Length: 219
Image 1: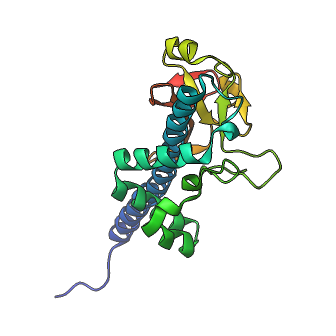
Image 2: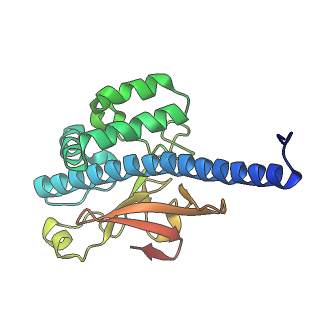
Image 3: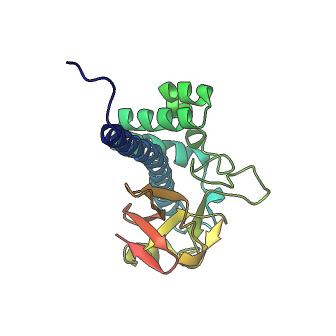
């Protein structure tokens, strides 16, 4: 004889398995999107940091803020960073973020991402895709700030510094301590759906640091 239907236990087990698989799929999807946003932001900061170093070398002094850096320096630095980062990785990151935001035009433009706002070198356009208050949303809104510790230093003094943070994800043009950094801009979820928030910054030697809270760094 053939058995008709399923037992209650079989149905419950099936529902539980489907629920687990759905959760795992959701977490992986969300983390992929967040990782793509973080990758783009890291490339932005690395390019800005490289452009900053070019400015210091040319002018023998650290600028008062990032808007003082000529667009050409930023464009050249961005090209260097993208080449080192891996072109296909950045294209994929822009594509994923574009799809998540539902902006198909942005997703399509990933094929020619060197036309990205960062490549134009305009600090009023350069945006962290995870920034909830991006440039243009208010008169003073920015995605990245410059450490006041290094402002106006001469090149020789700047080069003597330890590997200090130079540029960080920030809602103000300059910052003087970690409490002013956007430490909750990015999210990493675990399989219990707990969200771990963090921010990012770049050091003088182009090392990326993660800020998990307002009191310190997590290497």
